[in-house]
Length: 340
Figure 1 (cartoon, rainbow, N blue to C red):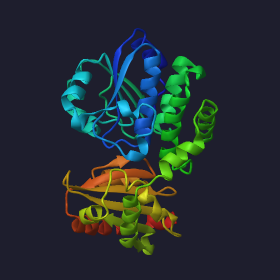
Figure 2: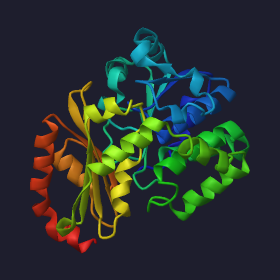
Figure 3: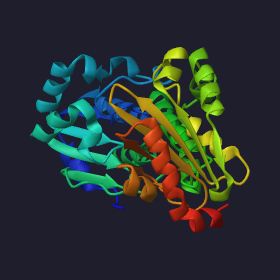
């Protein structure tokens, strides 16, 4: 945990700068919300700021104010790299390891401008000139709220900025269900509503506009559900065939992993998703109580994240990955049973 480096940020932004703000690859609501909010704030302060994303993002986030102006590196890499190379200041938001920047990793390594990290994940790498890292924070959006209100006061919270920040906080806290949503988080969310975030419209945009493909794919995931009561574990998987049959769209599997935790007696839920493009199995882990999926993901699946929400990957086949996962569970029997 590091305190908000307010003086360092003020010094970095004391004159108009050319700035770029970057989320992690496959950006979610927190990554995009924090980036767009910070960009809009910086542009009101006479900076020239652009959001550059490593790749495209789900349709259910494209309503976010300013989303239509994001530069997508996977379809415009030369322009994206040029913007980073010419920037005076580069902000990396919602990730703390340059490997999470996908196609933009090389450009960030070569960047000569000042680099500012704002992130809430565990184990930040020491690449930034200025680091604001707080692993107990609910979301990067809550951290950007602190940045904006400390630099510009609450009057800097426009309805557009407030909507972006509220979106990230809500999505990263599971609609305020997770333990990371503290009393302070709820006060921040209330302040954002007071400054123009329409909580009902945001919830509808995020959760009530799903594609038919998402519901079909959800059925496939549920069909694959395996419950292991002896280890308080539920797992699901989605194959490339499932995605093809259901006409998969980016973001369709968002939140599926949480379904396992809705089962009585389950404290560990996992979903395995084949990803032929990246030649890997993408894995999402969720837990309730004290079972630490961040440690589990780091130790066994080259991943990490938070105590109750993490991700990982496997280069083995789906069947081999599932077999390996099941083989690990006896090692955690006493821990899993104690958290039921």
